[in-house]
Structures are given as structure tokens and as C-alpha cells.
Image 1: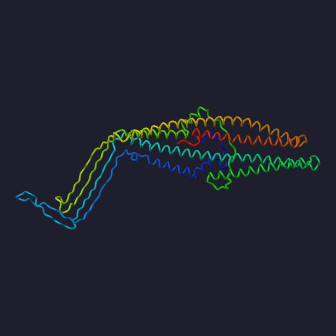
Image 2: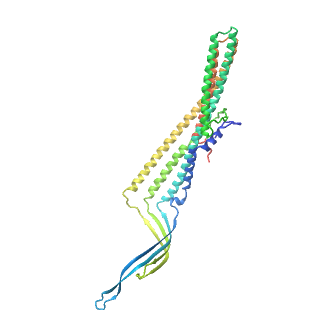
Length: 435
């Protein structure tokens, strides 16, 4: 992936998590088989561009009882034929033939050429559909990975907050022993420890659920405790104009819509090809044998040789089916054009939304960094004053909560901005390497 700021050292990186998920994903496997099946159909013979050659043969045998009237001569007076009746049982007749046949459609309005182009375009469409499935899986894994990283950092922040609350409780209890603090201050400090403990327990539960979710997507054991990289670096993006150019060239949704339009345009050309005559060539070389029995003037016949022919079919009228079929294809092409325009506008809208969200989140993130620094400084000063007896427990807790909220807000902004960046990578077709 481009613009990546990940650094992985002895940890499960995002790239490794994605690779594991892609290997185990059944939807991707099914789509890969679809691609293989589509690519396997792309050859000229499947489009009818090549002649067909075949061997054809057959044999027949008959055994019958026969009664035949045979002309034996003519009456010398009247000239009428004189017939004789002959009968025979078990008269055998047989025939056999063997031939090599060649058929070739020479011209049919280029329909076969368009069908070949349709096969190639269908294979390309299946590849784009596979890419879309893979991109969706990558985004799903990235979301799960960053959610786990977000919660890991949140857990670290809350654990630090709980430790500070415990230190405050110990300090107040020590003051109470010497009569400096009252029981209410101790009670308030203990309540704050309990509150922070509950918040940490809730986060730990969410952390475990997120880890199981990531393990599930990777096809790993659900209780796998792989370490992940919680450090994320943000990047400067190209300009909006550059991103829009990348969208037009690489976005999978736009390319899928373009492939669908191309397929429908080719189907229209196939429909229009039916208006043209069809010219076909046929030839054969065959051997024929016949045993016609004893009553035939030619008891046995053997023939062999070459035969060839040309056929021409000119469409004139077929009940308006041809015209309506072309009209239907034209409607489908117009619909695909409208869908392509719609997809282009939707993707550009999503790109601009993600781009400006990224820029806005990045700006807020940098401002929030300043807020965290101020909250830390305020907490440090308040803690020092609290230990000197110059600040109340309420002021100490307020400073502590302000620091907690500021750090959590910064954490959320970091990962929200990173996910915005991944969305931009997906929209621009940069999430996966182009072949």
C-alpha cells in the first residue's frame, strides 16, 4: 500500500494480517475460481471463429422375409409385362458410411468476432470483481486491526489514569492518618479509583473482543495473542486533482461499470449482426457401402469421394424479433451509460468527502496534540499543588479527567485519520498493487 507509515518490529504488521486474511478468505477463493473459469472461455473456437472438423459414421443391418414381384419378360401378343413372384426368408441387407466433415461460417456480420470480444471483456470484468472483493477484505481487516490498536492505546491511557488515581488515594489516606485530610477526601479518591477500574475493565473486554474479531478475519485461533503495532504515522496526501485523476484511471467501481458498458455495447453489435447475411462453407470426404440383398439390380454398392457446398442465409423477416432485440440492446446500453455516470459521480463525491475529512481530521489532530500538551502541563502543576496542599481533590480530579479526555480524543483522531487515508487509497485504486 502507498503512503504507509507503519513500522513493524517483531510484531504482527497490518500487511501480515491482511496476507493471512486473504489466504483464508473463502469469498476470495470462489471469486478466483470465477476468474479462472472466465479466462478459460477466451479462445477463438469458443466464439465460432474457427471451422469445425469431425468424423461421422454409421452402420445398419436388416434381416427380413421378402416377397418380390419380378418382371420376367413381356407378352409377345399384348406386350404386357410378365411378372414372377419370388419369396425368400432371412434376406440380409446392410449399409455403412464413414465421412470427414468440415463446416465453417465465413461471414455472419462479424457476430463471432464480437462474441470473442465479449468473452475477453467478461474475463476482465471477473478480474475487476475479484479485485473489489479483495479490496473489501483488506478494508475489513484494516478496520479490525486499527480498532485493536486504538483500544490497546486506550487501555494504556486508562491504565495510567488508574495508576494516578491509586497514587492519589494512597496520598490522601496517608494525609488522613496524620489528620491533614478528612474521610470525605478519602472516600472521593476511592470512588475515583473504582470508576477508573470499571472503565479499564470495560476497555479490556472490548480489547479482547476486537482481538478475537481480528483473529477470525485472519483465520487464526480465536485466542491468539499476537502483538500488533500500535504506532501509526500519518502521511501527506497528493493534491485533490491528482487523487481525482487516479480515481478516473484506477477505481475498481468505475472500471467495473466501464466493463459492463463495454459488454452491453458488444451485445448490441451482436444483435445488429443478425441483419447481415450468413455465409457458410461445408465439405466432406466420405466412404459409403451398401449390401442391398439378392433382389436388387445392384446387390452391392461402394462409393467414396469429396463433396462441398456453400450456403447463404439472408434474413428478411422474422416477426420483428430482430428489430425488438436491437432496441432492447440499445436500452441496455443507455442504462449502462447512465449507471457509469452515476458511479463516477458517487466515487468523486466519496473521494472529496474522504479527502476533506482527512484534511480536517489532520488539522484537528495537530491542534489536539497542543491540547494534550496543555492538559499534561496542567495536570502536572495541579498534582504538585495538590501534594503541597494548595489544590483540592476536585481540582486534581478535574485536571486528571481533562488529560484523560484529551489523550483519548487524540487517540481517536489518529485512527480516524488513518482510516480516512485507507478509504482514499481504496477509492484511488492504490490499496492493492496494479498488475
